[in-house]
Length: 556
Image (cartoon, rainbow, N blue to C red; front, side):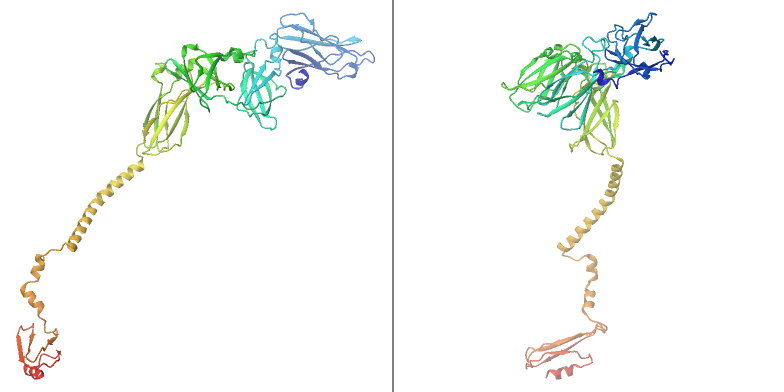
């Protein structure tokens, strides 16, 4: 392990200068560089043999504890002919400062040179942890042992403070996935059956700002897919004085059981598989939910897991969820108060009455998830707010919106969500453009209605005139067509030419010709009698100067 990380460990370097008289020729030995490497509980000293004259020299180290003046021989580092030594057997406090000094010996002994003092814990490097893997069909269980030995002195007070990071990838692929901040026992879900996965792990101490190095690569193959899948989408909520646990499952007619574990046991590297306990009222459940009283679990943080069975086959345990009884009791669905504007919604978020007079946000930083959508559409929009009073802009006027919200407590300590609140329906008010169009519409209607009424009246008048005429002429027409006017209309003027037609029926026919002169209103009559039928019809266009005698001669 030391050889694996020797090139990359944190080192305390000191340059030790000393002068050793040469046995022959009086030459002085050159300076030597000393390095202190500390990995977990392994303490290593290294130096370089620069001068060839030191090939047969030996080296020795002394140490001095803080607060003392006595130098003691450093165990494991006396009369060393090589260029490194191990002083891990030294019993000392890793939190106290220590001093080292070195000298070379070859026929003559050089003077001591002191290395800069250091505190072992501050200079120590975290080594790679040991890893044990167990495979399921779609998951891998990882058991991580803390760095150092079982009775480690360096990390004796940090065994439960370690956090681990790992990188996992398929053996047949180069794509890597990094998972950070996990405990000593961790389970990776959503893997593929019958697939080889490889991973490597490193440890860290966040409080001491120490980050270790990745250890060796471990590989394991997942098993054949199990006949029954584990339950999924597990949620827990509070109802009165009880917890309600719900989940989803693909098959019907199944039996479920629920177990719980105190979350702090996850940090203990000891196997805790026998620490899981059965949840009361949640054993051999036939439905996809169970209810158990709150007093079953005292205040604290717990892990819950489920398993399905059909009598002959049993699924693997589900993915574990965290239940914090303290925050769960307070983190109830929020209450929404929504006011509408022309193109926005003003949302107020309040604490539910069941939470008491003490707001949840006083003890836990909350983030609110708000989901809203148009009533005629299923397209949801989601926003997150840290405030309880805010405006959602850029909405459509005169549109019904549906709004719901829930609270999230998310930080380093908590990671919990409440159930969604009741859906609130609200309609936005008309916008400025709608008001303008409304006014324009009213003005248009004021001008259009009289015009429409007038047009209807004209149309009715025309219909009555065409289809229902009056039997008696109107008074003005009656005046125009008076008796004298009718006579004048029937008589032609002197300028008009009147056709005179004679019809001779037989010889005894009496033909009568009337000539009317409209100008002087004189009337002349001509009559003639003949007893022969000439069989001729005469049309006379002659002038009015013909006498009656000429007419009579023509008939004869």
